[in-house]
Image (cartoon, rainbow, N blue to C red; front, side):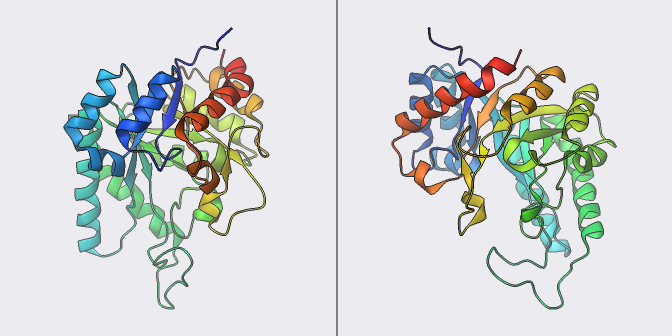
Length: 292
């Protein structure tokens, strides 16, 4: 008996080598209900064409990745970030998704992964998180106009320096609390939050507050790759307790799509149909039984 894959979504980061059209094709062929799109693939296809491709395939866009990188200190950097995020909001609305995933950015002193922070750089995490809150506040009216929700993504603390100064679901919910839940929400990404001792309580809080906007699944695998960003695996390949986390998400009232988002060179080197078949099998066995 085939499993119900109507809530399963292929995030295009999982099939990085495929164009948007190719990713949509393999997702539809496998019987998935949705795709999560990254902006680079949308830009390659063209915004209107991307929206049409997904629509004609009979799929939903579960989310758009990504907005964010809101931590610039200088006025020029802040203006550029706001401009880019407003463009992302328009893209999300055009693609037919309410959910714009926000990777909020790391310390501005960190120029790029693998390089040392500037000696006189800004290492003030408290001030950096405040700048994130300030930029979110500036974006909220524009997001409301376009019926798009800014979805804060807490990231594993190993990425606090260069990608995300929000490390826990609690931090993300505290920041979101000043805004309406239909405009600022949160996403639970198992790779980033599986370790958090407050996770169960904070997922319940997100549900009670109406802010649980997405559920992304992949596994934490060891040893870490030289580029730690690429240390994700298929569900079941590592250390994440999908039974518990999925149950908490379901109990919090989440009924949306479940995205598989894997950054892994070996996965990227695998044919797309094989990748989707593998993730569908792992979803069927490890996630789907705990969604209801």
